[in-house]
Length: 459
Ligand code: IFM
Image (cartoon, rainbow, N blue to C red; front, side):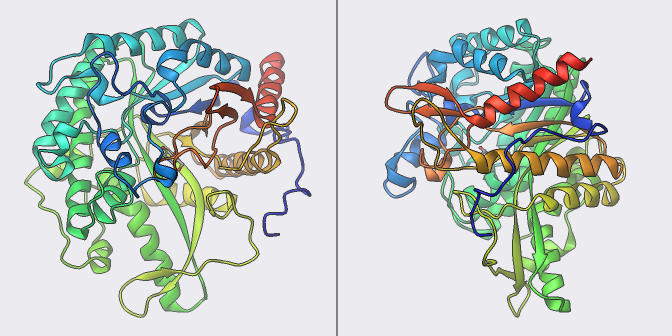
């Protein structure tokens, strides 16, 4: 069924009576990130970030789009938070723009801080759980100019940032995530150059990853000291790799795919060591690791955020690695990503088995892009509805298999700046007309609201 969505069932949320989705303590929320929605890049003392620089560089982002205006959320935040009320969700995941809240000397920028205080204050008034990510890719450009994630000094700069934010926002945040998707920051940012800052060198990727993870681990005790009542964790994107054949070589290729995408991050966090296989895949790229680093990286966490989108079918490259073999005739999204809910279930069950002492999990992102249009004031997004239904069922199956999963955030609350793909790819459950900034609830949003109203009425 290659993208024939007409036959898909419409109601996404008719889970069986014993589904975790009906439990009021299973958190259902929506997620965004600062650079993707805020705009206002030159206002109130915000400094340039690596994404301002990257997106202004010709050829880096589709159609030359930038986050300069995005969804204009910096000015429309109050009515945007009302969208969350319209959805009846329990929580909201957002990120803070580091370049908005600190100047180049590391001093607080009060106007930037006030923006997030107002935002979080309003979320609390609405009774919503607040999940705040400190770093969702918008590194201040002045730090990149000093080597960015390749310079070990960044660990201390990130520590100062985490310290400031957790002192200023203590009591307003239910859960702090240090980093969003370090794989993307390290691999796409420094390994293949598809993301800011656009560097492409295998050794850079592993060294950037080491500093990202070290910054994460070093920040956890700081967050704990400043804001003891909140939960502390990290968000990792994970990928399912399946073998193109049953041959040993292809099965090894699928294993290596998951080492590169998952174990590269999860092993240091939960086993205190990088996976050996990683350096078989990328010989000679071992990062510089100092005494005590791995212990710091493996600091115990209160939660693990998991972002999942698709699977990749791979075969052996005939040497030490893997190559993708795209499957024909499978359902795909506007991104070209295969819709594969079983991958989410299988990964969750696998992580639970592999990592002793895994903390409770939140699915901090899951969703899909489609070319949604407003027709007669309505936005029909049947593929998203079906996608969400099937992935929520996969989460429920993992819970039934014994995985401790506490919540799920749809990516995204609204259409936004999809990094190197600009505004063309629409991930929101709320449609944005970028000419008028009009917000329109898509059909998926209406069904989420309907389901949550029913769930809330039951208890
Ligand atoms: O839009 C991104 C988000 O910023 C990080 N996770 C994946 C999403 C979809 O690509």
